[in-house]
Amino acid sequence: MNNRRNFIRTAGATMLGATAVSRVGAASLPEAVIQTSPDMQPPLIPTTGRPYNPVVTLNGWTLPWRMKNGVKEFHLVAEPVVREIAPGMKVNLWGYNGQSPGPTIEVVEGDRIRIFVTNKLPEETTVHWHGVLLPSGMDGVSGLTQPAIRPGKTFVYEFVLQRSGTFMYHPHADEMTQMAMGMMGMFIVHPKDPRQMKVDRDFVFLLNAYDVDPGSATPKVNTMLDFNLWTWNSRAFPGIDPLVARTGDRVRIRMGNLTMTSHPIHLHGPHFEVTGTDGGWIPKTARWPEVTTDVAVGRMRAIEFDALAGDWAFHCHKAHHTMNAMGHDVPTMIGVDQKDVADKVRKLIPDYMVMGERGMADMGEMEMPLPDNTLPMMTGQGPFGAIGMGGMFSVVKVRDDVKPGDYKDPGWYKHPAKTLAYEYTGGLPNPARAAGPTADKTTLIVRKPMGGHEGH
Image: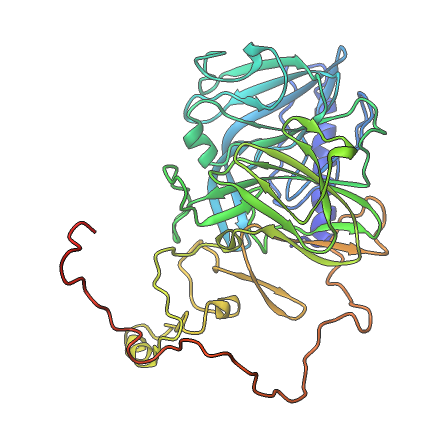
């Protein structure tokens, strides 16, 4: 997770990038600002154009711009990048401006924007502005609305933002390959009136997934569902930063889903409301309380809640999506005594460890040698031991003393007296049980069909 030293250092890098843009203000092409740190950068406070309340991109950053004759200009560079999924694992991806996902683009309702896109990929590409109302010729579908951007070429997209909300961007040229390689980003259009839909903290991230074999570094782009790395902004827990807030803050979390399946996103602790969908903001009278919201493929969701003090788990509720690299065709070994087999295997592989005979929780603490460039299935230590999670998991950390604009990790929550679950140490009388079937020595006998079942 982030620490204060990294936060300050990387915040400085972003400020330098913004300064670089101003130095080339007279050039015909805006400078492409590059960011390579995987740490979450502080919000980019607008110094030109209409005012707005900026978002914070989880383990990401916002792309600086320049104003030219009243037009807000950005420069995206599509290029191969290396992304650290979590400490100990780096992956070859394709992205924008040094990272995958690309930087968040923040604009304001009514802005005229001009986005230069330079292609440094080995193949052609385009950019589709997912959910944004714009002229057909700016929609970024190769062959349909524009010629593809060939390697080495730069195209310009220019349009006016007609409504505020949460949107995304991604290629629409060989999108199966390019999205599997990590090409995507968030596109936030703020309301023209900064008082509308105002919150104290506004987080944003993309749900994405990769299939990277242990010992390799490039995703398998033809995988349809059986991914082994489930990530937020191309980061897996414990590499995902916490979402930090102050008690009582109104917090918004915006999510976009560019994976191949839906994700039921669940927040422990405070109940939330879904306040934004693909179609825009939801009127207050149409909202209802939730603790889980399903984010389907290609959709965007914004949720809001009033922050309560504590450490609150925040994760996808599909259990395999809170694991890191794992095999899916492994037989269930619960209740199987593996001692004799383990002793024999250790004569050949001294580091071999028994797994699964009591469930898989031991994976959270075990230290078995791994292949190069992969991650343990579940990892991450909390104040009480192994958290037993990986993948799409983070923690919403709410404290009474967090200052406005402060997003650094405050450490673990200190529970007030008499508010922490504790061990019962009294007697345990045998419970009264109703009669029912129990397993015996015949339970494991397999009976083969004896005829009449040929069609099965």
